[in-house]
Image (tube, rainbow, N blue to C red; front, side, top):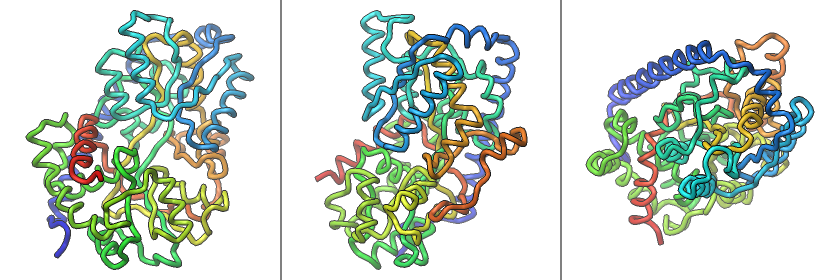
Length: 415
């Protein structure tokens, strides 16, 4: 028995409807931002002059040596070019920073009396900050490098988990659920949920996913939810109890059948995707997953995985989004934060970030629209393990679905 049944034509129609809604909204938002940019008429040189000498406290995840090194390179660059000092405040969970900014607002620390100038954010954390008025005035329309952002082909640069960004956060990088395995052990990787489940049955205990609420684990759940649902459009709206029960029922049926064939019979789950990748390297698992399509290439370049590892995505699409930087409402160095956000969007910074040997984080820019010299910064051969054929991007559900999914998963499966 297949793990789920659906009409291919029906699924295609649903995806086209959601894609059409997504593209229409992104075009409207792009036009709005363009008009706002024309109307604003801000003097960027004046703002850059205000930023000189400021110290920007950038609260960003610090779980990767490569990312930390990249931020240090950014710090050196903005110091040399703009006289802005960038301090990386290393954090484990951006939700803690959101709570800190919220506490500052409740304590009356308004205007320029906050502790955060810039923060790495997306998803439910952005939605919470926007809803609670924890972000300042829109700023992306004033960034000179924002004109290079691909807001048409990459609509998630304007829509964060189905929540319009409204210029309150600047796109930084792209992400999409990607799987990888050793081609010597998995010559024919699964291309959808049904073949993934079949592989789990064929090789008991050799597949798994991270334990939610780990970000990658929750992303896997959302992939299953979108792929098994009869109506994907419901996920573009805030979750209600009634919608949640009906829309997620197929997901729970799929997981109920899948779990007994997983690692440790689905009674335990790895805590992180990084742990899964180590288990893949050790031969304990056959497949790992990531939200960076270049993750496997990074691991190969670092000699942690063999060159025979390959990356792939489900044929009909995998869930994807954009990660951003935002400026809180009470940032002391708002001008400096804007200068840093603009530099992060520069072709120079985006090309370096996309380099497999540096970070390998996909760019948010429309590379084809860049001047010839800047476009050349992105050229380079395909590295071993790098994703060579991208699948369609399935838009993230509205941020309100995340908490409900995680709590229900814990209720059903946590041991």
